[in-house]
Image (cartoon, rainbow, N blue to C red; front, top):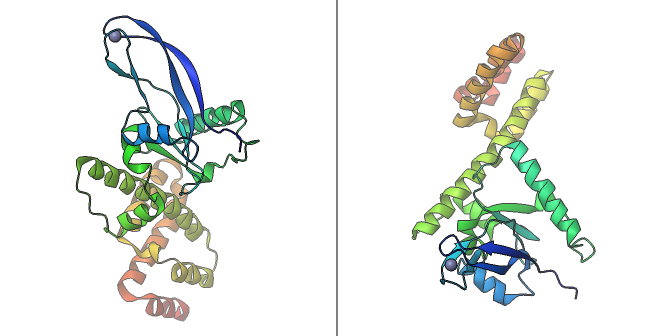
Length: 252
Ligand SMILES: [Zn+2]
């Protein structure tokens, strides 16, 4: 089996005593290959370097890719320093480009690790010790059902982070649904879309439509009547049920 853990040597100077020293900074860690590095991950020490002059620990900022072949997201989790919980599109694209470069640099594709943006997750560094060994997919599911019972402060941060991820995923899906709703050209198509996607009838969807309308009011006011009309339809379905609303529509 080819090696899949890689470090870069970095020369650092201590902020406290000024001593220069060289350290291995891990950029790719294969969890199966390197139990010693896994231990540093779960004790929160993977990004700490120790000054040989004064013994102070310092934190190094660098991309870290953790390959977890047994877990989702498979194969990796990517924690970086100071990353916002929800990244903007531009920041995310830049990060992906950086990861792709790291991938190519270490020849991971040849080592059998595909680069798949849909199968990677960006984890804040402080959550890594906890998130590392979790089934994050199952935890996201539990969070959405209010099924997580966080006990420690770190678990609370973890649960909050999962909540943000769930909200973000919901929003992406909701916006796609709304686009489909606005594009429906027949009553039948509308009815089918609503029947197949009960999320359209959630309260928070109504809030999202309101924000969409605010943006349109400035940028595309000509679309407002259509959007307002579809919002009214959703409200009526929520209130009276799909049968009754569409029967009335058909009678018109
Ligand atoms: Zn020092």
